[in-house]
Image (cartoon, rainbow over all chains, first blue to last red; front, side, top):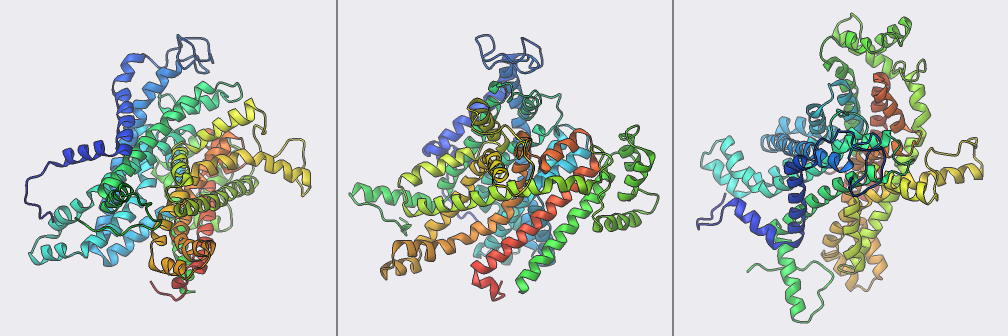
Length: 312
Length: 327
């Protein structure tokens, strides 16, 4: 594929520059970096989250910044320690989901014929079966823990990625450079790994981010139901205990509000990063923005329809 | 017609996959499934009830193949076994008590969210870069990042507990008898505002963005420009020419989102102690009531498949190309 012969900056540097140029992407990246820092270093700063440190259900105060839970544990400590497990599961599941999706999608799109028909049927079926009830039934039969949770999330989450990757594979496969590679006698494996997959990098990165958002949300939901390991401190089990200790009916908002806010902030950060990437990798959006800025400088009001922009 | 039949065939296959998963899952448990399953119930269930359970699940000494057909035959009769948590009520009866409320809650939420989200999407594409377009899509995208059930907790705490504007749970007041009276229906609506509202808030953003993005593409197309050039009124151009075509991706997404929204709505039910499947599901998880859990999974799956088929009918009406039997 890449006929670029001039030396250029490596992949990571390109992404880094792109993130810094785009405002949305930088806000998202900063948010995310904050949470990753908390997940990595935070647990050492706050101490044991399960220690009974005070009177149960105390509102936020100087000694306990986010108050205490129904059992008398420190909410802030639980929140910080929970970040680690929740993010780890989220990122791991996000990655595996995309790997499985890409494998199935590329196989279906590249092989075509019966293989395609069968695999497409499979992911379409998994798309239409409601995920949460399926996840509950599977998780209930397996020993509770992070591994089960991860497995369940992968089983219920891979299908959408497979569908998108298959469509993309079909479209790339029809291009000339793939035909050229075939004529040149390259093996199928090489065509897939060297010609097709590299052309999907931005799609796959976007999918990893999107799947991580899904994995964190779904994981919190399942744990809230009591399907995680409830003796472990994660965001989901924090909410589970808040609900179990009737936090709402005693007015203890501090036991559930911060956790949900964190879930949302991570999700929002990832989404921002994703839409930033979209603007970076989608030349049409980029050119359109440049065109509108150009019109504004000249004192024109940009029109309502999407402008057709020339290259160069 | 062929399109509708083909989709129907697909849903039959999906239903079969769900049934088969349901059959094999208990057998994936470590060790001998029958012993492991029944070890948990010992002391809580009468021997006859255990025998009944065993038969419904096909966990007999027959071959796996034989067990599978016994199981299918039972499901076809609507026999999902006996609930453990609500012993001795059959699972089908337990599910029936909550089915209406779940369908009511999730159905209302998904329709309201779709309609409002799509309308805002149309508006923000038409007045692009106007205030609607700058404020609403990002606001709802942010709201969509919250877990549904957490939004429900916040709404319950703020509007229900602190301000006391709405009841704190259940589908209707304990002092009312269900019936088609005005007071009862009004009470049901009052109890539904918060659960429906929070699901709508959480899901609106998706519809809004899909519709907005497709509308922007469609508004730039030649036939819309022609319609405008002909001097048709803006309302006509937007609704009859652009929106109808831009709706297609949203409708396709609607079917797929149903299962997802239903999942969120089940969790929301738990927060509001709403007497639907979500509430039953928690009882099932807490009491390790496997027959009930599996029954709920099957019934919800079938409901979602049915709803998907209805969506296909709508698609057929919206897009004449599918009627011609092409693609």
